[in-house]
Image 1 (tube, one colour):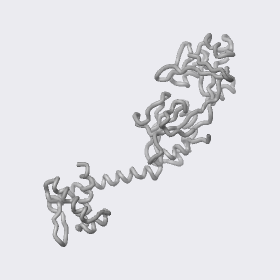
Image 2 (cartoon, rainbow, N blue to C red):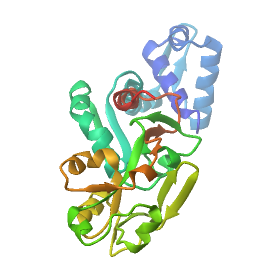
Image 3 (cartoon, rainbow, N blue to C red):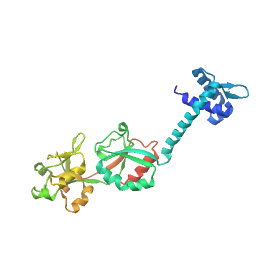
Image 4 (cartoon, rainbow, N blue to C red):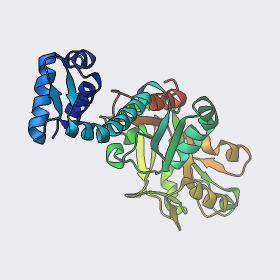
Length: 294
């Protein structure tokens, strides 16, 4: 049955042209090959679809009935294929993207209004997740994630500059707790954890040749970084988030940043996707919009 669609499409052309010569020219095949294809189709169906003479070809009663049902279906298939091809040529259609909440605020939202104006026929279906995911298994076209979490077989495009993690507490908290001067001091503090699906994020510190990791211990942990910072602002304890996202709160004195000299820059966020081959125009437009220079 795997060849039936092509053979049925060829049958329609022969029936429309009423000539193997003209039909073969239209299909770009030889007349003998087309005749052989039609005989094979009739043999499998057990019915004669075309009446042939030395001068003409015309559909039989069975062929006419088949053509009546076949033509609309083939037209729908051709329209569907044409619409699919447009995705390669014209920025349109849906893009499913998975992205952490912090990256949505830093990377996507500042450019979304402009993107929507330039590409009104593209619809972004955005799923929020902090955890690395298998794009293909999840049915996503692309994702945004920290570079360290992206598999090597993915194509990755930088969408932020280098970032720094900020360790912060509120003035209220530091009124009754000393400011930590060394990562080891955090062991005596209430540390609010950020939780991935597979467990708490461990705070990594580095200074010169020294590197160490601290597992946060405190009264609460969250899987949403904005809730971590909300708890910090309420004086619950010390927490972490991307420095850029906290710049305004730090500048206004609502948060106090500590241990900055122990928090080095790291690669930041990248948009990633499975392959460069046959890339839809809509995805290419999103990549160009979000891309930043290395």
